[in-house]
Length: 218
Length: 250
Image (tube, rainbow over all chains, first blue to last red; front, side):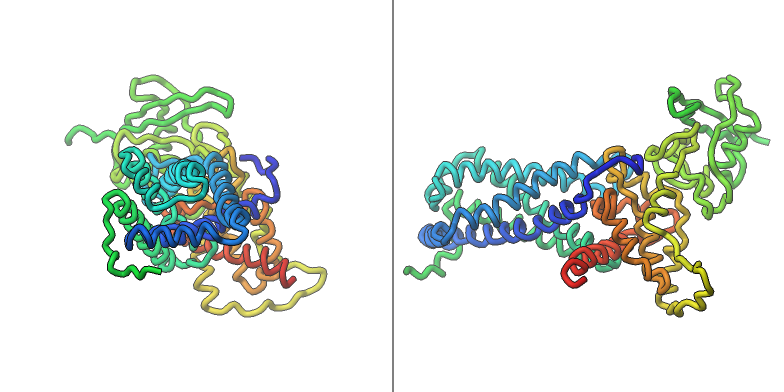
């Protein structure tokens, strides 16, 4: 910890970029992804319509790389770098914030591993043409099901804590009271994402479509 | 009179930065209102371990004995705190005493906190009032700013906030919460605000405010109850505004 050790002067920018990409676009994409996939709760034809609409976005590869893959990859790789430069001390100081600090690192890693696998199985192997049927058949495999649930919970937790971190670290929630409120907001978001994600998975697994009556055929 | 109550205390000893460390245990006579500093003084009076071996007095820093000078921070039962306000009756025994781990060791419990003083210089944690002529009176400080600044001004640079911070370690040059809070103190002062930009720029360099990862241990460990997480949030906001708007709007 010497004051003279050299470190890149761009660390401020890179660190802020890490924090920002977690919310925009990565967090926003997660919201979009859950939103689109919730079409499974209506029925299979609705899901396939939504998925076709997404698959036919103009400039699709550019949109995917610029808004989803690259920001996510940056967030993950720089996140691991941040992890390596921290030194957790949870045994001496088992405080809530300190637990979240540690959990944020592990859930980030789990989410990253899950997303990589998820991309491979649901995007690469299907040549970007996933349908209700391909996802539903994957989810009949209990290992797939387990990894989906773990990945969804880890991502939801990471987003909830991340929103709290973001609001504190950008000074948008500065007072102790505002930071508490930001924490509650993070909990609400994390739980909402976790519940929505699990419901979507159950919909595929059990062929359960509670909103089937909403469906209007094209 | 009943047999004298004893206080068991284990201290991590190290003769110098390169020397090996060892633990020594002492059994002291209990007295009312005893704190850890009193224990260290008692050992200095009679430096004999609990097994009867003669040893040397413990090297440690302390001065005011009332949580004002900030010099006696150490690990007491694995927690960073001030030895002067650590009352023996409130501690589990044997009491384990170690030096802070985030600063270079000098000897026994004495560490070198120069990193903090260097950081304070780096961020210009003062208000320049000297000129080649009489600068006259400064602007009035509103009662609101006074009320906000007073708790920040009570920082004693003890280093506990750095000690408990997972982001302060040998891989990282993070200046820590105390320094960021001092930047807030001098930036809210109307005269100090004249150097606000320089302070923020210094805090956007290596080891600056961006290194905070919001574990929020600092605010829990601060013996002066300084709202350190508020300070970090506010300075963070000022910093990105300056980085972004300074570039956009000049």
